[in-house]
Image (cartoon, rainbow, N blue to C red):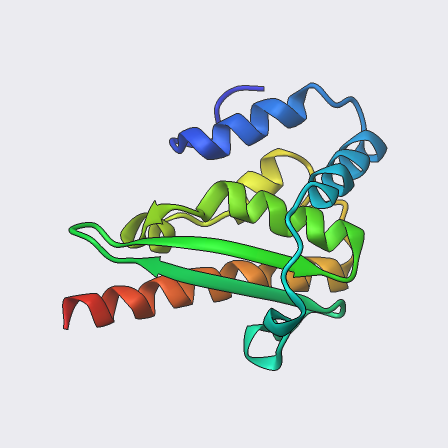
Length: 148
């Protein structure tokens, strides 16, 4: 598959999924990625960390690492295996990046390139978009606060 992104992390994920032949293999791989995700502590599974718009329960924590170029570090968890895997992919793509890069990078293109965008249920797709929008909105909000 030709490169569909100028982002090295997104391209690495696209290349990784290119080796998987069909949707079932890709689906299993996403679940395996979710199983490898470090679970959140019980006291982190609170309403403030819940992602609204997801049918499954999803908790997303973003921490801003201050510095000359502030970065965001992400952690997430879910009660659904596939959603944990989608969160793991978002963490690989977005975590530990400068805020301005997070705001500029739309993960939907990567999910389209790996064939997940077309194969998720409408509810899962809405949940994925809710996670992406929350990450980008929080990065944008943090950017405004670090410039103030």
